[in-house]
Length: 364
Ligand SMILES: NC(=O)C1=CN([C@@H]2O[C@H](COP(=O)(O)OP(=O)(O)OC[C@H]3O[C@@H](n4cnc5c(N)ncnc54)[C@H](OP(=O)(O)O)[C@@H]3O)[C@@H](O)[C@H]2O)C=CC1
Ligand SMILES: O=C/C=C/c1ccc(O)c(O)c1
Ligand SMILES: [Zn+2]
Ligand SMILES: [Zn+2]
Image (cartoon, rainbow, N blue to C red):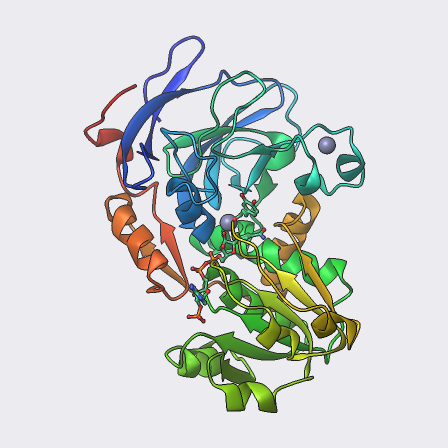
């Protein structure tokens, strides 16, 4: 961490300044540690496609300077006086959400990710009026409710993608009653979220079909990730042969795409679970869902409870994420490669090993 005075700590993050999405060093202050706050020194942070959407203002609501990063693993360096769950030295994780109202129906049901007053870990405003900034930074201050312990047996860099990609696939499988062994699942889009989908679904005993935009990932999907079948979405013969065969599809495509070819793959009562953040309308004709009582639904990350659960699930099942670890000064190339579908399957930035406090900085 950087300089410390009586109240505030100055840190360095890598921020986008505009919708080009280019990240560069940026100095800013963390809030004073509150009674329930945990201060963590960031070790690793994964790069999710949502970070690309956000830095490039794909959703039209981006505020700059923006330090992205919401798959954050760090070491606790300080805790507020009312923090009971953590102490200095613990290895912990932070994901997409750092605040919620604690009073609404989702909050009371412990699905705080659906709180309308949730606070995002970056590109949002905290209760003190300061912008929130994410994990591509030397340190973060986070309320203990939104911090999870990384269990023993999970390497910190391996844990990072579980904090978004991992819980994002685990949560709908659990919520929609899709954990039963023997189910036939489809994973549409084999990227960061999709590859965790294959691994988690296989560990639940499902027969998993990857549906991809190309043949390029076939061997890796079958041999390394353990998928049972592989379809190329543009191959109409393959798609027709697989009609009416899947109980669910986890759709991770991050861009506008037709839904009907995938609805056709579902059995009666099958579910298409939308994950991709797409700011354009998607379309389908109603018989595609009526004739088969199919469901199109969506799901948003997972709760804090589910985040703890998926971490332990991965330890218990011996699951790891497949990652490419890079240093902070490679982050712009990593974002570009992610955008052009050139990563197997998640970049994780070694923030702690990148000496980011020493970088030449612009603006405070
Ligand atoms: N709902 C939620 O809570 C969450 C949502 N997301 C969102 O999910 C989406 C996926 O995230 P992530 O896995 O990190 O992204 P990745 O870029 O890692 O993976 C997306 C995959 O989709 C396929 N794909 C990419 N572009 C296209 C395209 N234009 N048409 C068809 N297929 C395409 C590619 O797989 P292939 O080569 O196999 O075709 C690619 O690997 C993003 O929109 C992200 O914002 C992410 C996390 C949580
Ligand atoms: O990667 C995690 C966040 C996903 C997300 C889902 C939906 C939405 O509108 C977002 O802005 C982000
Ligand atoms: Zn994410
Ligand atoms: Zn709430």
